[in-house]
Image: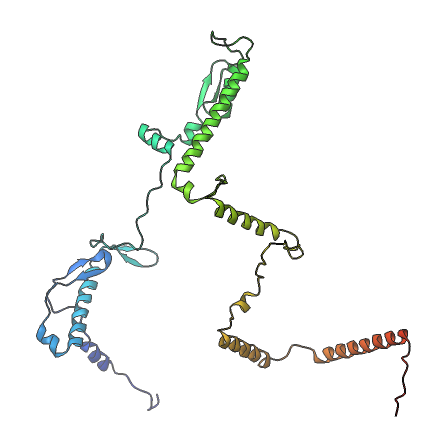
Length: 325
């Protein structure tokens, strides 16, 4: 070991650790704890004499003692060992803390949901929907609900008893189909009314029929403009070669996003980007084959000269006029 290298003695480390504050606090524990929120409240009065001598040192010592008491109380909580380590199980929070956002409101119920709750009607479970019943005529089990149930009703109603109120010559099966269609239409009207009454139907316009009225003209115009813009860029050329209408307003062209961010007021950023680009070019070795690029350039120039001479010979020699003295 060289003489210049510092030597650390264990006695120095022990002496330095003795000067550090201990975890035991020399004060009466008068704090009110809310361990669920990891907080503690001290309602005791301060020592005015010590505070006037050195306010910063007094507040620092006062806060350190209270935090040490809080940490000591946290170590008294029940522990739970998991794979990542040991966790302390905190009690329930005592102090109510205000929420950042308002409480979530319940979803408004439709007419059927309100009626079902009032009458105690519950939604059928999957086992109830797949329930079977015994058909005495077929001597087998059939579905109690669903498509097969309606098929069973058709098979059972192959003959309809005529009543005294039925008209002569009227087809009872056609009448049954018309009544069924009326029931289906009434059900659709009820569903539409439920959608209109719910808050979701008012906030989202999914499936809502367009009402052509004077009050709804701005919404109709906005929807038509949006549909027109979508249809115009739906071609193979993304609307590049489409003919522009007479009263159609010119749409702003979408440029490079990186160049759009560099506005007139951001010249400094543009210059910095240019300097960085130049540094990347000059600080790295060139990957361009200079000889190949030079030969291609010479061949290109020779090709241009050849074409130029050929076209001039086809046109014929130009006559030279003598200059008058």
